Amino acid sequence: MAALAAAPAALSACESESNSSGQVSEASTADSAGPGLSGIKRTRRPPLPTVEPMMRVRVFRARAETPSVQIGETDQWLRVFPLASAPGTVVLRGPLQLCVESGRWSIVDKDSRRAPVENLDGLDIASLAGAGPAVHINDRLYPGSLRLVARTDQGPEAFDVINLVPLEAYLPGVVAAELFDHWHLQTRAAQAIAARSFACSEHTLFRGRRAYDVTNTARSQVYIGRIEHDDTLDAVRTTRGQVLAYDAALVPGYYSSCCGGLAARAVDVIGNHPANDIAPLAGREGEDICITVKVANWTIQRPVQVLTRRLIAYGKRRGREDLAGLATIASIEVVESNVHQRPVRYAVTDVRANRVELGAETFMRAANYEQGQGLSRPKQPLMSSYLRAVVSESTVIFKGHGLGHGAGMCQYGAEQLARSGKSHRDIMAWYYPEAEIVRAYT
Ligand SMILES: [Zn+2]
Image 1 (spheres, rainbow, N blue to C red):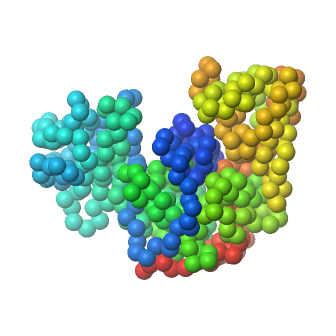
Image 2: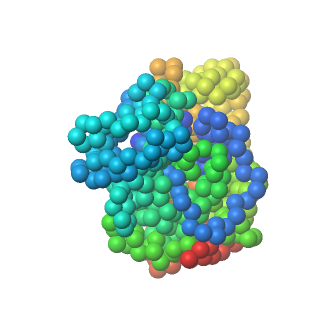
Image 3: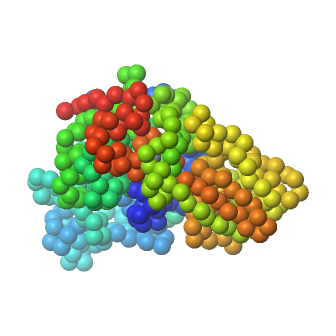
């Protein structure tokens, strides 16, 4: 989930570029933007959709460690058609084993026959079944069809599998993954509208820029394909086409697991550009209702030396010489907070009195950084950037609040509101001040 602690799939699936346990718009956060994306800035607000978008969701990354994928069920007939210069459509019996070999697709069907695909252009794969087509990838079922795209920039055998799925068929697999099964129907309806708004925003941003709009991880929003959960299906169906709007444009429905009691502003934690600088994404006033839940308060200890190494390694990777040049950390202080009193900037001072200021989200990512310098993934990653730190001899004690970036809807808070009798409209009004819910398409 975009940052729900109890969902291991969400956190472990996070890509290595980001240790953030929260949803981010990939192109929006300068520090976490993937290769080639850091230059993308939202200069204009995304428009309201007029028709249901066809989402492009990356659901599998074939790389050196997992170079092949199984597609389709036993005896399912699948149509495989190359996208560009093509020898034409072939119909094969599943399951298919696909990988890239010697610069071309290798497709082997159930009877061990190889399909004659001679190049590395993209492939589309769809079930021959009529209504409600869906295709398995490994053991998971995805509505819609699949597109395979070579990623030679990631290695000679690398490719992405992208699920092409109408937005309304995509959303149940998001809402079910983002919330616990026993959570309230009204929380699900609010989550559906937030997730739909976020998806539409990413769909607009990435069209024409890359082959997919969102990933299936907490970096975008977690997606687990086709699901059967009545309340989730009801929540999506009853809110069909509904998105958040403000001043005649779309509000990207950012959300995170738990704000810890104080809201973040999207310009501080998602990306500092005009499209995020709107009232609905500036955070609600006052203390949130989530403060009594378990993840609202946490304490994590780290050896000072290990934390120092993480910050140095992060600085080297990101070309931040000030961080890379740090000696042993002596103190970490809040130097700036937002209007709601949530910290947005920290100063790190080392034993030689070097002082480095950095944004709160950047600090959290650096403190959780795990590559190089003999580092590995922290046993307890910092769960949010809303924290206070005390350096005591060889240990740093972090007392923090919440899980995820804290902008937009707080999932734990939404559930508390729903249990107290609030509707999904009340929940949206609580977390996205001044936004309205509109039906953008039928
Ligand atoms: Zn909250």
